[in-house]
Image (cartoon, rainbow, N blue to C red; front, side):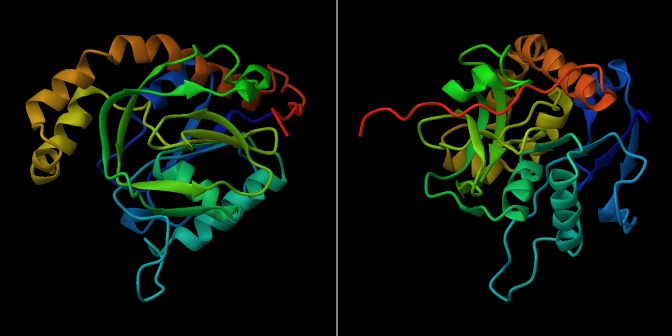
Length: 256
């Protein structure tokens, strides 16, 4: 069985970084494709054990002229649909999670709550208890946020795994082995510092500054590693076939 993971880097400022190290340490061989440099996406997923789609500054929805956020997004969404259909373990991070949502019929829009930036907490939903990757995640783990768009409607059949007050769709699963995250787990302090330096006006509008955001994020990096490195290892184990996927489980509805 192959241990190759297809990693799609949508933006040069958001590489796999710590997530890539965790996946490699867990036994995956990363095959990074950078369509932002005109590298072609594969037509199918033959020979790949997993797919990871990273973030970026682009939008997961079409612009006013009907053009996609990046020229390769239609092909990428097609690849994500193939991954879900063929049960190829898939992980979408921030923009990658949004693209997984839109590929499967969900909706992504500019967030009415404004940008979400910095170290934040998300809260597990009940369904996380029965999810292969999420069942060992604490109730309110630390994450890093940097987005102005959000998933406003999950695809039909998606399972919501984590939420927050102003941005309710923080993590979800499609099928039994495709996961989308609204937040970042791959960043180190240098990556956050580069984003902050390029977004000083946005940070000022939020009442903060680059130094404050970088310090806030750096302070939780160890806690993030404690939670999300094992999460990445479980994803790699699913991809390598050494961890069984929990069967989908329906939860009872509360109230009437």
